[in-house]
Structure formats: C-alpha cells, structure tokens
Length: 219
Image (cartoon, rainbow, N blue to C red; front, side):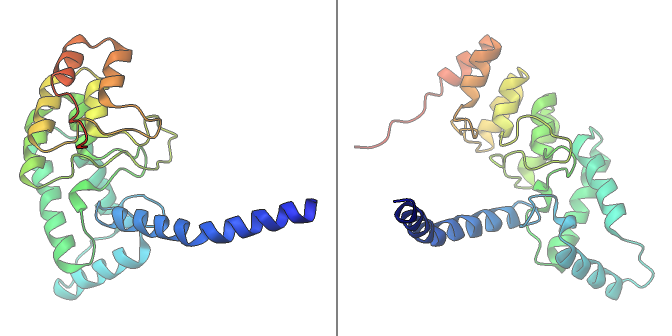
C-alpha cells in the first residue's frame, strides 16, 4: 500500500510539474517588467548578467565612467525615500539610460533590496502626493507589490493602496485611484485595502473605499 501511495504522489507531482514551471516563468517575466532580478525578486542591479552588460555599454560610450553597482544602489535607495525632486529627477535620468542601453525594464518600479518596497509604496505611506504625481507622469506601476527583502519586513505582497490604507493616507489613496491603481487588489492573505482600513479603524479610508465598491462580475 505504501508503494502504491508513493506511486500516486510521484504521478501527481509529474502532472503538476508543467503547471508549476509555467507559473515560475510568469513570475520571472512579471519581475522583469517591474525592475527586478527575475530570479530573486530583488532590484534589477542584483542581476549580475544584465547589470554587468549595462555597465559595459555605458563605459563603451563614456570612457572613464565610474558607474558601478554600489553607486546605482546608493542613488536608488535614496530615491525611494526622498522628498527631494532633484533626487527623483536624477533617478529618472538613470532609468532612461538603463532602459535605453539594456534589456532591463521597469527601472522606476525597482524595489529596495533591503525592505522590498518601491517608490510608490514609500510615497503612499508618507502621503507624498507630489511624488505620486511624479510617478504617474513616469508611468510607474501602481499595482506592483512589495517584494522579497533582507530585513524580514512585514507587509510582503502589499500594493501601494494597501499601504495608504494602513497609514490612513486618504489623499494618496485618491491619487492612486486616479493613477489607475486597483483598489480591490488582494494581498497574499486574501485581504484588500478595505480590509486593512477596517482593521485599523481608519474611518475616512473605509468610507472612500466603500464608495468604490468592487464591480460585480458579469453573469
């Protein structure tokens, strides 16, 4: 009987293998489009092959360039939390060059390797509507969720809308909606921004989200 049971398990896993492979491929592609290392989910500059090719392209065009992983990481981490438009614009210029000289996409959406949060997440949590507007202009992805991190940060898999609801940032949530954010997006635990606001007792957020009731599926 034990042998039969093992045979059934092996057969079942073999059946699932192609499905799991497709799911992994889909996740890797999603990460590529959002400024991430497709293997780890960290920021794009952690992908040695892609980033090294980009650095080589820059140095071929500009002899003596000192660009390297450390300098890009330092500017990126500063950009994520900064309220200084000059810093935003500096990172925006880096992204233009990165995407022009490499196959890297979604540079503006790249998450922190430390916290897993993107610029959209930090701006939403801080209620920084000016930065969110700047990100709208640069077509940032307002549904991209928090990613893997090295600090065991909570809220992995949270969207900017989840974090605006968590921190009671109604103006930010309103701007996220205008920017095309999915206000009904579910975190890995299945809860929505409305669930977060209800749990935290953020009445204004609750009223706003309840006024944006999720559309009923067509029958």
